[in-house]
Image (cartoon, rainbow, N blue to C red):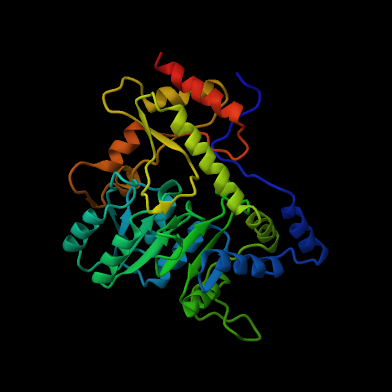
Length: 372
């Protein structure tokens, strides 16, 4: 077994992060809020192209506040991506809404617009739609946005995994009325933990900022007219984010090289890399493969073979409608069940920025040998 572990996707630090963190220490702004938070928000607004952003302690917090801004309440239906991480959909439960899961299409593995139309027919009273961009690959965002507009329903874009990805030249995180991104330790850039809520609705972001700081009223004493949350980002971790933003395009380019190297290396194997549309440019956060139908090799065979050599890989997200906690929720699919199929045949491969070409070749050789 190798001594040095090859990770799925670990933080990649450069040095500038320490400069901004030191500035927070030197000025004694180590508590939440401060210059780093303000400047980090501005840098994201400029990069993404939105009018307002609020830095929070998690992408999940951003999604929660988006759901709250959408007015979701007791019993309200929210149509959600099915093939995603639980953080995409859990905030609906925080506001006592009900998730209805919408199957994926094969071209991006994201929410199927055709299934979404069927879902609206079954649930015309839908309050909101949450679409995730799986593994950094943009969904069919124009189609989904048009459907939401048709039914006059708020679209929330979960761009937690897709920061820096574009769809038809437009940055993800701009297609919903409210949009969430994540800076978790394994994302394209990181603040160790954190997220941001984005919108062109400046007043809505101001309201979210109010809720995120315990909903404290503008009074000389502590007065609260609404329930609030302790969701704001620390000035220290925001400093990490400022340093990371200097390298976001570099990180994306490195991820693309990794994806293309896998695609070329596996061209003779009965596998397919995670797909994307020609009109989009993913950030290639995670490179994933699916094994062709009928093969005896399973994703678990590959995962265990890699783990034996101290190499991290991960199964595809288990669809939400298969999760025990959501066993009673409805699931809408058109034709075959795409999400379950991708889950059963798929695996996320090591996609770490710091993985060398030699290390990646080693990963590919292990996988190739399984078929020999």
